[in-house]
Image (cartoon, rainbow, N blue to C red):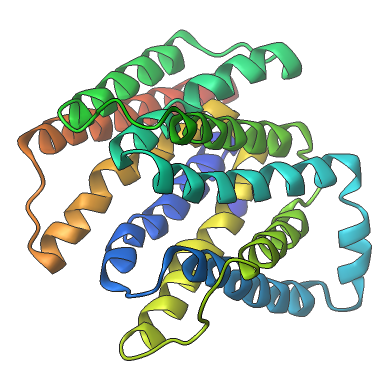
Length: 292
């Protein structure tokens, strides 16, 4: 079934499903009682073990061959992937959440710029329009929450967005290389880095269920799908899907914790969802026309 889809359809499905798995992430973080560095450790260690197990079963004896085939692109991916995982936490710790999320919303724009410079891929007018509309929507959602935050945290938020953009472009550049092993090693690097800051590794009460579930469902599965998606669609398009978390994340919290999102979140979220839906449908129509 999947093999019968066009590249545009494959990439859109992978990115969409991957991001949909990510959307309950903020809910699980809210429900957990684990400190920041312990959470980062588990979000590195558990996905590393789960995906490593999956890859060893999938590749069997060829796992190390796949690992050594990542080449210099895979090494750059490990570095960039690890950095943006860590800088996101540092940003959240040192500035307002709204500031961090607005910085991260710049990822599609940065992806388009990097793609045009290094991959010589021309970003379509439709994609640029979608990027601008979604970025303005994110600013609208968090406008009232944005304050003069710590410039240190804001800079690390920008580095996170840049890391996401670089990751997608590296995966796009190395279409023929399986970079999932690189992402696995990246998660190990994150876990090792966080290890030195963890005060307690103990999981108590509901955290015994919530933390592993979050790490598998919202981290392990999505990062595999999002790592593969740029093989089929452009880096800016992949990063556009990440903005769905801006609206769907608060909705999960609303349903479970009864924390009602603001009117700005609802309005901006509707605009984001419709923009991405229209952009994806137009992109699919273009590929269908080209194939006929």
